[in-house]
Length: 371
Length: 233
Image 1 (cartoon, rainbow over the protein chains, first blue to last red):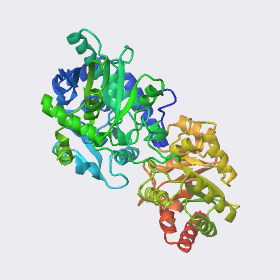
Image 2 (cartoon, one colour):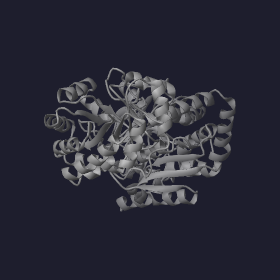
Image 3 (cartoon, rainbow over the protein chains, first blue to last red):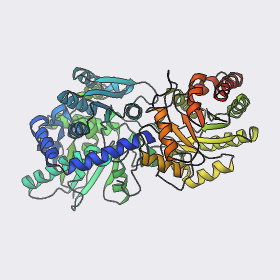
Image 4 (cartoon, each protein chain N blue to C red):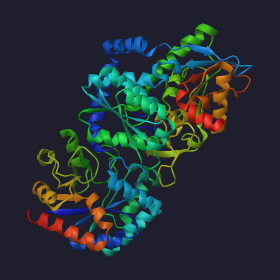
């Protein structure tokens, strides 16, 4: 259940039996053909899988950059892969109430969507600062029948929203499944979310082999909690392929963080020398988180994945450039990956970038900065 | 005699407040070492932690407050209560050693459940959701007494004492051989009396913090009402 020395279950005792139940339920589901068939059916007929690969010829002249188009998935981001899988799992566990946290609102929308689809009660915690930045997603969640509960203390962003979602889960654990949005949290969540997102890397590997006849030189994805990245990377970990994770420069849990414990897991976190969690800063609400999935910390330590940063300004420039050169408005999160991908050295000619979501939600924030 | 545990947040005023709590009848003082993201805590303790952190209460300062409190109330057990991130940063063994060196009788780590780091001596918690197997494990590993979390939820006052408590006490009595203290949601003398009828001790946190904000006299009077309620059992 751990990734080297990272991971674990650093939660109050009240949750331990629920985590045991979740672990058993997940192990059973993984072995059950009916679970995979149901999920596959939903992913193909409801979510829109497989998502295409698009060659971005004009965005980065001199390179062949392929975009894995999770932005074309229903609800506009990779988050739905995980939300669908966990909703099917929650029903198997007999849970009728779902709580979730959201930062950019993409996970909240995905969760509200699957709850509408399955008739589950849905409560989403969201920081007030993020509600301001991502107003369209707040309205979407309401339309989908979810209750969005503002979190008005601390940083008023994803960190506090996650804490409040976990507190809700502690209080309502008998009836409620916590549908965590990234590969973070106590075991077995990082593993569940990774396995539900591996479809991204699995598809992308087959697709690039089909179109190019070889593996890419490099695979690049943005990393907040790190779920789209881990899902994409898992398709290539065993290959001789350079793998790069791109964090927001002001929220670089892997680049500038230290070992700490946040939201139930030991990982690399932004914290002071006393273990107090620090504030993250990013224009992208989805990357504005001081923690990261424990498996990323492990992949960094063993040297398999490089983690680098991109600034707000670099992400904004890539956001604008992809729109103008390819007719694709990316979310600000994968704009960080695009910014680094186009600057890779010449030998990294064939590059695969995870385009984890679309940018409609970011228009107001991005345009205010670009003007 | 039933034991009364009062929780206070570690701040510069805490030694004086702890003395007032002991004068009011507290047998044990839990000393909160504030953490930025306290998952087990409701709004009252969370806000107190935010304030303490804003005043610069980091691990070193908290240990100093522990030592000062120990000097004032040396016959009273003092038990730091905190979160794993603090120990991870300070060093697990070093933290345990420095707590003991500064007068701590044991400690509580709210997000380090039984079974994790068994070598770290601490008061273990069990909850209504705990299986019999986990209650037995916590009983074996706990340091002195077992902390019964009366409800599924975070710290904080509730209108009624948790209906889950009698069943949890009954199970714990059957499974463990150590004193059991009940905490979470105990705020009034009525709660205190009812909980003390079942358990060997009670823990009062959020309401005690609210009284402490009004000063030592207010806290002393409040603790005395709890003492009287507990002693009436």
